[in-house]
Image (cartoon, rainbow, N blue to C red; front, side, top):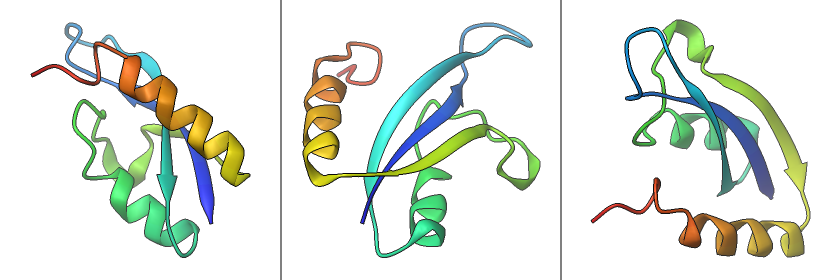
Length: 78
């Protein structure tokens, strides 16, 4: 199963955040939720309140989203 998550990102100043879209693959929604809590730059709030939306998507939408993620300079800093 493939999922699109809208999450609050951090490290942009005290009390500030931005929305980031990430794409995950997992057996079910709970597996994806557990993976997403370990994501870098994710605002770690109690009870996973930093996750705004989880939506199941198609395989094609997942591949398209992963291509977009690879081009995002904020997510891929090395």
